[in-house]
Length: 109
Image (cartoon, rainbow, N blue to C red):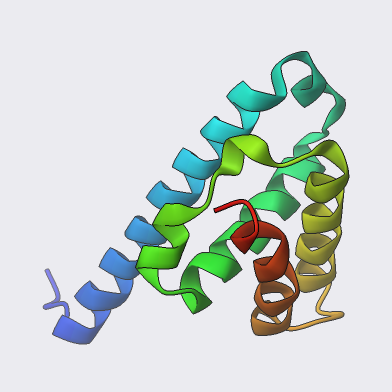
């Protein structure tokens, strides 16, 4: 079995932490949205995961922990989904999608 470098272990750990935090945020949003959650397609949810992952990457952890994901409105979610789609489609960078999303999320802290 090939030896894995410390750098690669660090990358994998970072990716796992990001995915875990994004899943926790998605679950909070899903519960808060209730029956409205059914209006979002799998594609919408993937775009939301993308943008939340971008935000998690570029935001300090203390600020991330302060976000109240349960207080996001449907309009705000659609805006975040749009930023996520633009990032997925390489219309904007991951950093740009994070920067555009942060004001929406930080005011929910």
